[in-house]
Image 1: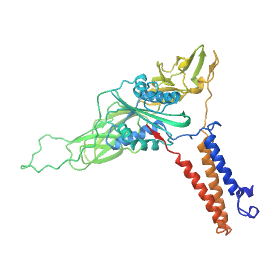
Image 2: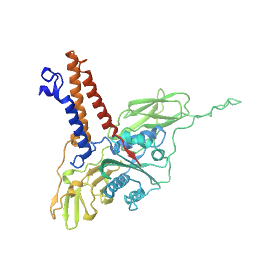
Image 3: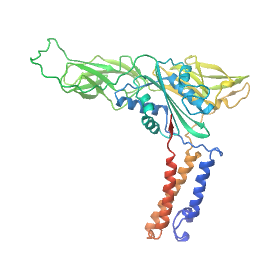
Image 4: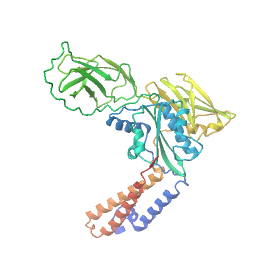
Length: 462
């Protein structure tokens, strides 16, 4: 084994696995796997860092920086995005409008979302949420959706599958607003100085300082545990400091020299009820206390309670409804089924066999807008009449080495380790000068392959 990996006298200080024949074999493996991997059942895409939560977080960060309102996750828009993604995979098209008359608005309406304003962004082939977001922001039309003042809610679906003959990751971003209310930026234009008055102004008697919290509002139920506290003061001049108290204990402070102030806790608020008060530091001036609740935990659909039964030409799907769910949906292909909520009880629906698509998803949302998704496509693979099929719980993470990208990266990493060992032993034994030509050739090959692999880490938007 030493001859294969370690430079020594026996292999003339050139490991067998770093010789030209080995590099040719590596190259042939890379070409074969990346060209014919799909025929061998090796998926192209690795486990992606893209998730609906990441996409929504990046969108809201961009909007907040521009002084816009943040968008809240909406279960119906999420169902619409999932149905649109499923439909693109099943009908095999890459567009906002499908060959059979499909439109974004059709999926939004079918999900039960009654919109006044709505929009859609699409992306495919990306590996990171940041890559998707940056591409959208570089496109004027996609950026217009992300930064629109018309939107209040958002839904995102991230689905992996075969589209137009290629394994890819598809991202669907839906925007909506069910009211006529639009949200103007909160960043105000700089004020112009006014000339001094001809006569001194005498303050009106009875003027008092005051402070109040404007966000969150009393009894708000929030699913963002990193919410900022906002407020206003009256009759303050110059710079002042606001202290935020939770249960009468100071959790932080912020400074301002305008009427409005904002406090970033720089950490998550704990789950449950929060009672906060704002005070002007150094003065006996307090706001009214505000009670709000943080609930950032989505409902839990217990996998062991999910059962699918084939009865004639229908499927009966049943599962135990989460105790905190207020909305339950079943999405299969481009169909969306509303499920009547019966908390802490087994609920069931019947689905015609012809409606079952390649992907089937259970969704549950709670009052705070948290959404749980569970892919149950595998439950419909067995068609045994009259028998129940419950899929096993699959633990662990996706095996990176079972993908074409995983094979490519594994070979690159392997050669890099061998090359590092060769350089070290050549240097240690004073043979670095003699082997510099071979080392350069191997290094150049490694760099070219590395660039080729990572060049594919891009995607398309629509």
